[in-house]
Image (cartoon, rainbow, N blue to C red):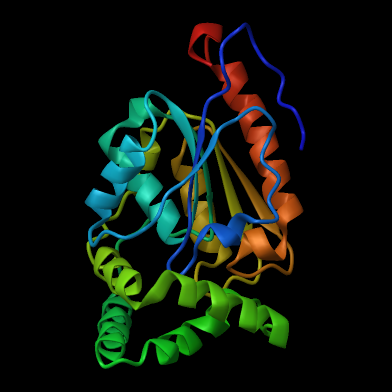
Length: 248
């Protein structure tokens, strides 16, 4: 792991890491977190974005840096809206800061109905292609890795996550008022959250850096863990330089 320079005797800020829908901590298993920072993983098991954002804000005391992918980024945007003074740094990837579209509401309702009918495996298969760049799509091993992760999340949590998705709001305005260093990571071949979504986020946040990863799809921590690790390392250097020593 790469050490982040310390300023004064204070302890490095904690990181709170938030996965996407049907994802767990294994999503981040190949990411190298900068040395010295406590890392906390949030579990997405509640049925509204507001409740999930409160869980995020309650996970550690004081200021922190949050890292979110997809639904995890949506939760981070909501936390920024509720308590901007708590968010010292923001790393989002595979993200959409806008309100849900009608086609998304329809898909979420359909998937919830399938899970209620005992067809969770069908939902996993329907979501799988969007997780990977296409063509060529996932290899057999990549597809099975995603299935294992989704099965570990399970149908009950999946239904809560689908319900939470439907409570999302447009949070571009919250990003415009953000004062924390921000890095926005975009897979150039992410069909679910294409680069235009990330350009909007980066334009809205005053202190944002946009990084586009060539050839990558939605699951950036799996497909390009070194890029995610480097973005976190560089973000934390920016966070430390932007804060007084007593608050770092």
